[in-house]
Length: 212
Image 1 (cartoon, one colour):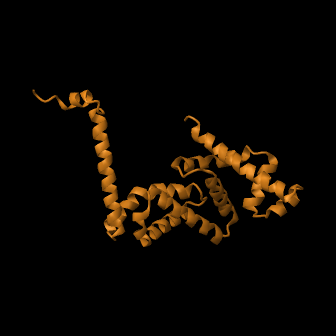
Image 2 (tube, rainbow, N blue to C red; image 1 turned 90 degrees about the vertical axis):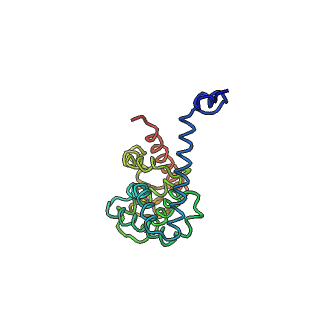
Image 3 (spheres, one colour; image 1 turned 180 degrees about the horizontal axis):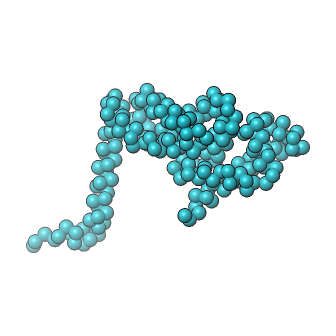
């Protein structure tokens, strides 16, 4: 008996359509190629490392830019992320995925930036963004885009919550000091700030789900 045409045989056997099979093969080939690229970069292949930078620099820069007021700061810290990646490239093989590993480095560098820099306006924004990141289950590039809505979300808070967030992050007051100004107990202020952060996170999440 003549063999059945490939597409017909695939359907007759209950297999996936040819396009799906080929797409799966392409994805597997891309994953294999990416793994080989990571392995070469880990061994010190500068061309492979340059290719990794090309693949991930927009992701890393976008993460930083969404959490920093000054574009120049985002550019500088992005370079620092890839410098640390290069210096610690032997850890690449232990990373579950390169993108999240780089974002983890970027998040640590942001925390160092907050401790090092004394420009309160810029640092206050970054600190608040990092606090809101901690409320998310994982990092999603769309969350970076949602942070553009943070000023509007701040405006949606009640007056006491806005004042508490401003005093906590911009003026850098302790909870007890905020309580004195708002005439509330320290515990009440902690709860107020906690609820305000949760409201901001929920507001940003709603912005993500809003149809464009």
